[in-house]
Image 1 (cartoon, helix red, strand yellow):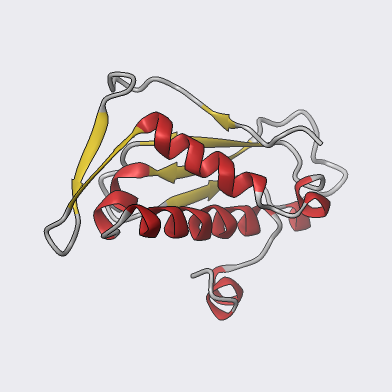
Image 2 (cartoon, rainbow, N blue to C red):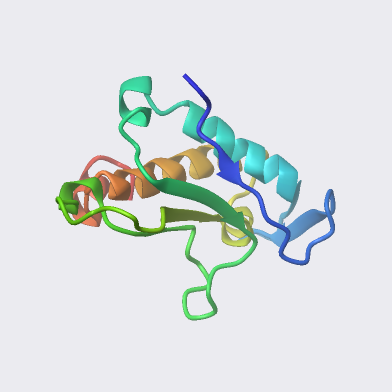
Length: 143
């Protein structure tokens, strides 16, 4: 099965330049955009194949920062969940999952924390693609 892909785009950062984020405990974590994109890709790879095959018309992006209105947002799903698609669903742009690097680095104290939080965030946003709401995700431990 082909690997689910992260769409890469240059948004003004210098390739290979690490982002430095001051975590809540004062620790500074650094991680390049490429390293973070690889963590997102690895999290996508861990989605069970039987579910990954069902993902339809969705693109995954990594961005450095979320909109200013929600600076602590870790991820965002925008689109029409699979459960809401009907016969009318055709010829539309792909749904979009965006994972934000900056807030993730700021909330984590170690690289291991970043790996774990990235996986939780990816699963959370993919679950929205499948029509699972926040209440259910929190109950499952993916809040």
